[in-house]
Length: 402
Ligand SMILES: *Cc1c(COP(=O)(O)O)cnc(C)c1O
Image 1 (cartoon, rainbow, N blue to C red):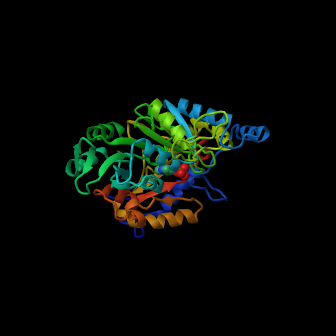
Image 2: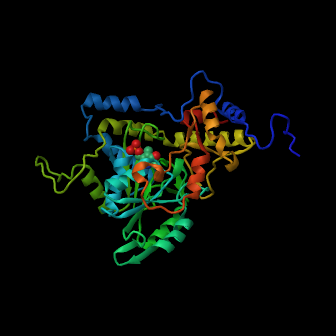
Image 3: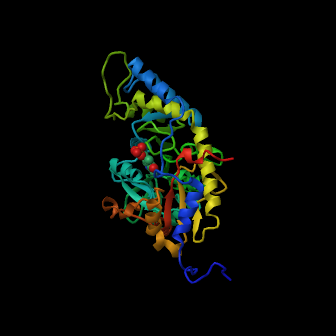
């Protein structure tokens, strides 16, 4: 018997107030609204940025750019990290390095931030949307393998989509809200078709798949240091590679393709001015020194949420699968399918109460510019979109773990 069942609460009704109460339990009573994500400047930020101003090195050349790249390579274990102006630019160049050409198709999760699909468009290629799995909220390798078995064929030129006639050149797993995609089966599937894997690790700095840092398992990986990410440079991004030649190309293309020379100005291909200014890199160096602490706080906050929502009926807090160590960049609450019609009520009431929760991104194939793109069955992504609510997740909120 359901002992909670009374005249006012029957078991088919959803208790929105219980969600607000659980949030209050974790986040406390606050006079000002609790943001979804705020940066945390608790280290050498002032010192390093002031050093740029004092020395005059504020622009696209400077010691902090080199130092930031070095520190990123150390933290991630990548062979090389190339700092760029933002995560979208990093994805654009990563896809070029993966050999994506005009009229190719690139497999992209429907559940992602729009930058993943836009970078494909910048290459003149076509995003082909694929489904997610509940365990990671990222790309479902098993479902993809079945799908490719139906629509794809391999030839000397690589993988061809039999439905459109286009080449499928690359796949871009995105580590959703910091949780690593199950990469082993994906890498195996893609290798079988000659599809290059480019990891969008924009949200997963400090996250590990079976002990290896996300963004270092595919041919190329990308990071973002936008203001809402775990580590911020104001705006910024990075390309991660293990291959020396790819690293050289990435640096060259993102720095206007200028041939190194003391005074001659000569460019040997169409390059991009995607350089990260020294000022931003200085901020990044200070932020990166605090990465381990940020991740620890985030993981503590995730534990607090899991605890607080354990007995709230009709909801589940997302928890990493066993092969993953997530940075829990954004915590996620999933309403039971039968309560998905309550999502907006929860968003409304939590925001009203000063907890700035947010829904999922609109799925890519629902955006006007991507409406007509090829896609597989997207049942899981659709379900997550209906039921997902991101919870306030700033690192500072997780500090009080005993
Ligand atoms: C933040 C983000 C990016 C890159 O964004 P920028 O704002 O250009 O740095 C790319 N992909 C995903 C999934 C992101 O969350």
